[in-house]
Amino acid sequence: MNKIRKLTAAWLASVLFIMQASMTVFAAQPYEHDPMANPKAAQDIVVNPNAVYGYSPSPDSKRLREFVDYNWSDPAVVNEMRAQREAYHESMQELYAIVIKMRAEGKPASDIAWAVSTRRNEIRLEAYKDDPEGLAKVKKSNLENYGNENGGTPGFFYDKYGSWEAVIEKALSTNAGADACLGLYDKYYDTYLLPVTQTAVQNSTPQSDTPAPAEAAADTVYTVISGDTLIRIAEKVYGNAADWRVLYDLNADSIRDPNRIFVGQELKIR
Image (cartoon, rainbow, N blue to C red; front, side):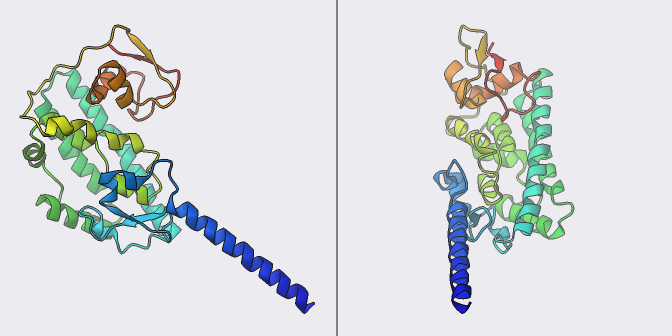
């Protein structure tokens, strides 16, 4: 009997060891796209096998260091922050609606930039309405990074990027490192590509308020295929990834979320 008990205990110990090892491997890389391959994400996070999603904020991060002391190995803590983050992403749809409406009204890029950048800051703070500690951390981080506890002002970003269109892009961007820590990196992966399209803009002289869109291809309809995003389609159709907004504006009646298009969907391209 003792021998059976010992064998059973040894078997259970082996199973638990294998399960723990499997969980550690999963935690180290739970994503299809590696967050550490993204320079913007990598500067804000570190690999943490004990974290629920394999990553936690880096102590050296300017944007996330205030969250380093959270217990990233506690599913309850992480899931609560994940829910807040999901609500924040959902609220960002309001910004896209503002851009579409103001472009339709013929508003200059400067006005659009001020509207969406200001509202972006408000949305971010509103996400912490039930988390006083988190709100205090965000305001502290904003003050250190932007000199304003409510977040960077449109003027701050215009001085940094030299273009109102770039300020709009900044307002529509999101922190990839935070998403990596909260299990959302793959879900919002395409949104991290948007700031990359602004490299040329950032390095150029200030643009006019209403830049002319690139000329569309001869076809008037494009059918979405596997792997497509608005950015990739814009690269193929217009030769410029930054013209994803043109596609979005043309198809606003059929695209609720610019990060959600499906195979077989037909998009107007001019």
